Image 1 (cartoon, rainbow, N blue to C red):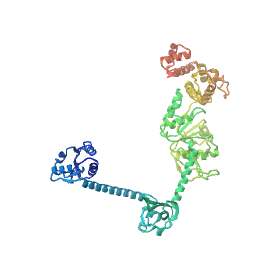
Image 2 (tube, one colour):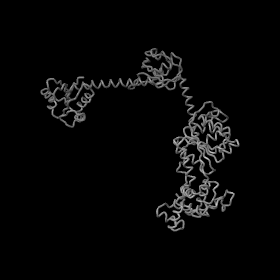
Image 3 (cartoon, rainbow, N blue to C red):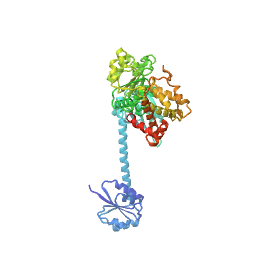
Image 4 (cartoon, rainbow, N blue to C red):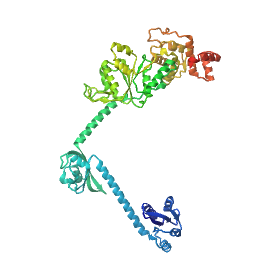
Length: 567
């Protein structure tokens, strides 16, 4: 490809336009730019492009093999100097001719831009699903898109160059041309096809003068389908709004489970292992031991943590409503079913469904639940469509399911499906080593809730808490501490303040407890509580010794004696 070597004299506004145009021409190479002003705009542009620049015209004219020189100064002295010094083979294009050259290039660019925009517009119009028809101001049809033929069955060749007032005189397009105003939601039949459509049309105005009009329309059948889809969507949205409060993430994680005893650590370790799989988990334990907290924590530590965590209390929902609560129902499935309702299983899709008090579920529902666990599918009440779900099940109960299986009140196959991983949460009386740390945690919690500044419990009060059997487990301990802290004015809870709330619902007297604890075990519990509160530093140990009313040396001896059990 032959390159034309071009020079430019004059780097002002006119020279800048010529420079920009020359840069866009593939067969042109700009070899130099000259201007008496070294700060002229085109000089800066040329420098940036690595092109030779100078303020001395002689240096530019000395360039060998320059094919064309553009003179953009319109200065007669400069033109005379060029005539005297230019090489014989260099053609000179003076200012007026240069302007004509720039105009031609600009017009070419505008033409190319127009073609590009026209191509883009045609692509857009050809791809839309709505039918489009365009006519000029006399009614002659100039354009129809492919969707026009799809909707009406009328070919493009049967429409182009026809007059809209003849082929479809009552349509929205003809109305816009006559009224010179937009027409919205016009329902009519397309001339030549009989297809009923909904049309929107508008006049095409250029500089305030009407040049034609355009109409966009869809068949009534498409509108009806859209309305049906919209109704379905609205039903789902209404249903979700009605149930949005039930879709929550888990509230607790493993950091919210408090304890240091061996039994507690063993349960925690098993719970963390179960979180790493998608296996069904059965959590057993007495009421008040924290089974729900374990369910939350397992979900939060699993790969489903960002998905819903849905809880169903099988004992709190009336048996007649339990099936609908679980699986949802279709509109009209029974009296009062005024809309489709999503059940807990469907809401938990992708996440975890926590079945609390699973032992209270009736046998009929147990069979339906078994199918969901096995096949991952179900139907809504009153529905025929099978719905697939991906749900992880965690169940909890304070009842003896094995005994219920033997009595026939709980399905054996469901029991084994649920009991893939069993978490047995120990009662508080079997983990009394955890009472000091639980007490400290709950005091901090209630300080925030009640605006108190309680620092802890007295040694006698702690002995009372450790000695009690806690039939209500952690929930009962929480209740006792909160009731005491509501009325306390001091910064330490005493034996007297706690004893009036302990054992109120127990058949035993508040001063008689189900267990007499060995003194050395009680001593270990008190040591652990003191070290947990004051820390392992020397200063902390001094405070611990003072609180326990023993010398620092005695504290060290006892820590050494019980080191294995206090770890």
